[in-house]
Length: 286
Ligand code: RIB
Image (tube, rainbow, N blue to C red; front, side, top):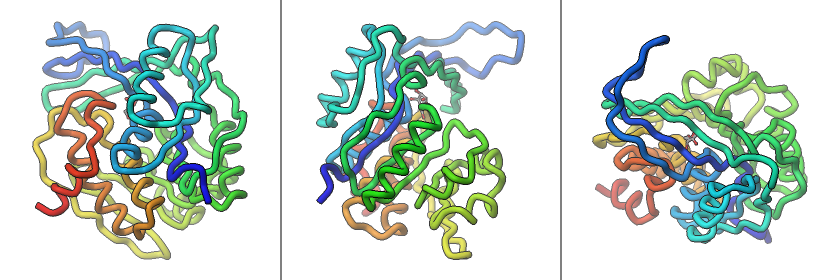
């Protein structure tokens, strides 16, 4: 019996979001439209997505000893996510993400890791699914997946932001979920697929592709009107992990995830846009 359905090992950021008509060119200054701050970070977004989809969730990570850290921890608790393994590193800033969002809802993001990059792995609870990304150190992800595999958990990696990963880490993944750019940075579909049972390549508005056992399955997209794509991939990964932990097949969990990912684009902000199970079900049934 696992302590949690989904254990997320990952980052928490304060997202500093500038809305502008278009992205600036190198060396160019633009006048933006608005500036807003949201809770974000791939780890927190995915933990919220899993919790709102119906999973019991714990978040393993760290915030800094600043106001942003207090703000983000309060959000973790208010979402019903267990923060026992969420540390505070007093002499580090909480992670920040500088996000530029254009009128088409497309973003570009620069992350300053702060406490996310400074924490070292110090154990975690058991979960049916252990889900990680790459905004913490590779050592943290490797140690977490090593432990998870030993405890019989399913490991899911969202390799974002992408870096070339050691084969030993890829071998610890049951499911890997990159987007089109990330899978190329990881060495291409065939190279990645040779290490894992399930490779899922997310394609934005075009849905996703699922490669398993040498065959390719399409995950059909849902048509929505996007206003902000930030956190849509996180909604996909978090809700997928929830449904997998609750007993869905990979194919069923991917369909649910595609609906959740589409819904996340229809609201601004990363954490605020993570959908609830009832809304995802409604889109699936529409
Ligand atoms: O995936 C979206 C997230 O990426 C943002 O919330 C930002 O914090 C960065 O981590």
